[in-house]
Image (cartoon, rainbow, N blue to C red; front, side, top):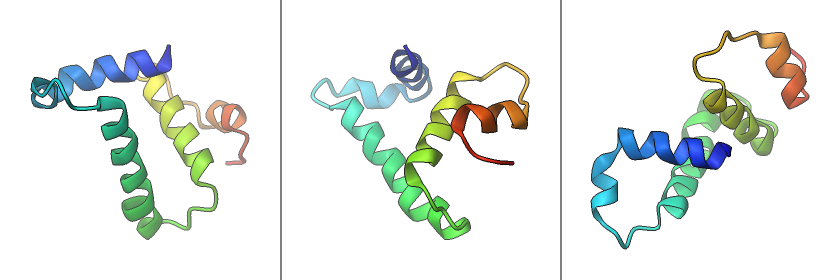
Amino acid sequence: MLKIYIKQLLEVCIQTLYNDLTLDTERFYASYVATYIEKDVSQLINLKDKYKFEEFMEILASSTGIELIYDNLAKIIGVSV
């Protein structure tokens, strides 16, 4: 369900990418996120667990529009605040 929500959100936000019917959108976004984590995030912070950060981003994306409570988010991901 989360993948469907994210894909729908991105389809609305970035319409031009969907004009090319041969584009593998799942691969495109997976590569985009991997590049974002490896280059941008890793340079800004000491990223110890790439997979925890990906999980963090997925949970944040699925929680759009609800109150952000850091303790609850940390419990879901399994990290300390």
